[in-house]
Length: 286
Image (cartoon, rainbow, N blue to C red; front, top):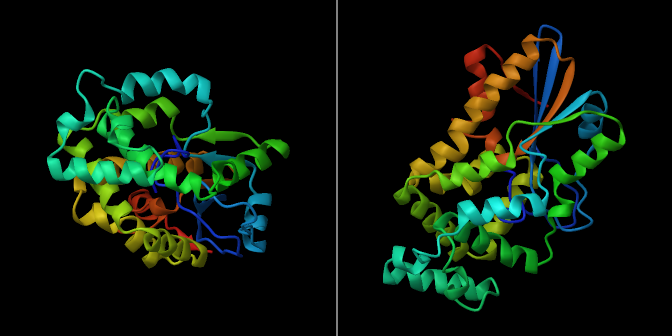
């Protein structure tokens, strides 16, 4: 639903070790075909999600497109420090007392001890950190994420792997937010954390069932209704850019391609399938 960058640091959608059948769409134009697959960026080991329908679509595809592919931690570290930290303006100085109390509680839950560990961070990086750490502690592994698995399988099969965005570009999505919108990102994260494990379970259930309405409700509704600026940058604008790129691929007759992006990008009124319609392309559920 959000950028693949920092999959180990943001909005990781999870799965328990049971069979799943995630949603998938297909778009055809002038002999070219694109399969659109909704992903989650981290899973518990043992999750079964590669259905026969998925395997057939992936096997017939000659190339794979992901949100990003350049995720080397050593390369990204200096960029994260540059864009995500601001020691001269501590996080606590940007929060109300009530918000600071929420962050302190979330930091304790994440195993950071207190909000002090987040003080050098800008709000966007604090939000990603607070979102992911409890999930990693619970055993959800980015190495088991759909994107990571697909990339490895494509490379093993000699299929080219491409990306819509770079890691640095994704970090700029956050770092370039206006100050109020950046704080809204942190606020929305705190609201989701406050909902506890039930929220995660609901997201998991929707993804496993391929329930488009459930995915939209659990992954997008909060930002759609309350944090529109965050939603516009992280969902709407990116879907439009991807739709333009996919339209160009199909017009150039790229054969059959497999596109795997966060499940939240494929549902709702501003989804990638909806964005494709402006190019005369109609995505159909497979």
